[in-house]
Length: 58
Image (tube, rainbow, N blue to C red; front, side):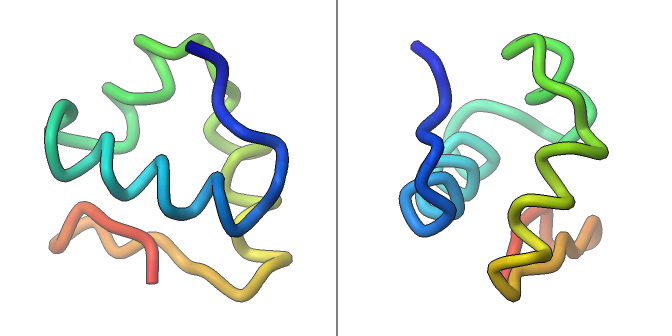
């Protein structure tokens, strides 16, 4: 399933996947074949930042 393009839906989907399926952002990006830098850039432009200790964007 491709990740949504809309930043708000992307934020929600990525956090759900990190919570339910992946132990890290690296694992999610590798499995989904997504560039981690691009994913973070889109979410950071929308005001969300990744916190590795919590394994979530907020």
